[in-house]
Image (tube, rainbow, N blue to C red; front, side):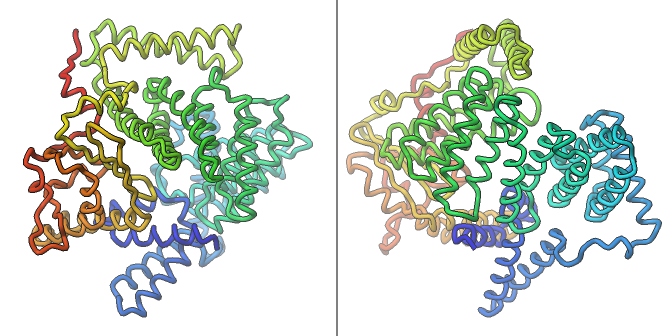
Length: 600
């Protein structure tokens, strides 16, 4: 097994062991679905055995229980046997399948607002039994139907499979399995020779499902996905279907970027080539959001190949596009809001690349832009009508609607003069952003050197930034270069585990949390290496400003102990006669210092 993936399994096991509540346990597993497979199950069973040998029966029993649940969820113990079910039970499933497939999906033409409520009422039936009934009924029914009827029914099955694959309720593992079977059934009719375009589209959807699949071996699932994407590309050519070709190239690149089998360097090289190909169609002018999405993947591939300069340039282009499109990405349906949350991860990759290239000023500027982006998006989404005058709100809505219509025309080939429309949309975006920035001055133009020069010479700043694999700390004073401290991967994992234990005690054992607070903060100081960080602060600085990140905002960092190896250990606050204060970011601190107010 890939050593990196094995370590990821062990890290996830440690995280779920330390989850303070069941809700957080479920959230942790949901956030790491790509790791929840048979390999994860095997790692759990091995860890349970190790804990048992060490005499820690509590953890061993808990992990054994988790393994049993996971084995059942992955359906590893028994293949579905319809003969073990009563005729009444089978009929219940069959009637539900007919209702959701031939009525809800077919009649509504795949309207999720019609299909999803029905699925939500029957999540108990979204399991292996339904999948097996779909397989048997679908193959028999399609085999008996006339050609045109079979093609129409196969289209309905594919639509249903698309919907259930994205259905947010029930078991994600079961939903994907049902979708996979639906695609496989449809492919008995949608053959390449007779229906090449439909065949290619179904192959692409099948590949997407295997890419997300939870059951089975992760490495094997990716191989199947790669094979299906590659098959789709024999029909989805650049000349015949350029946009479909570009989407498949992008997803194929993602699969190679995540591939476990084969030579890692070769996989990354293939991924880079596929991303680059996709960008010939997914251009910034025609498809800016798709362009940014593909650039993000390409940047990760360059980063994985240790080509940091290329990664920097690629992430820079992606972020510039994302920021120019902030209103289009944030507003609208739920899918766009989720997309906005995903795009914010690009900044973390960029900050890590900047540190690799020793571009420290750029790193801290992207840290600031990351934090400001979250703030600006939330303000725009919730409070725009109180920030902007009514006439400005109306104008911004007009910009939004006109841009959306124009972008739809470009994406669907309905624009009479695409080049002229692209230029017009860019003008509209610039006008919209300029108007927003007049009333919402916290924008993306933060210049660190200007901020640094405005600091008092007796003030020092400690700003944290938490990445997936390490912790970054920026130490800032008025003069000199910014000092960057980087943790080891173990410190990052220790911080995650510390947080989970801290919150567990806070929510479930409040007295114990209160009694152990001193020791907990001492452990936190050790994980954060606070004594080591303080040696980077000049002696003449008597005022400290802390800028936390993520859950560190919740903690009394000013009270963490320092000089832990000394008998006269004190807390951070005691070191600074001018006081210790907090700020959400350097940029917002600068805004407060300048006391800028919007002029209505």
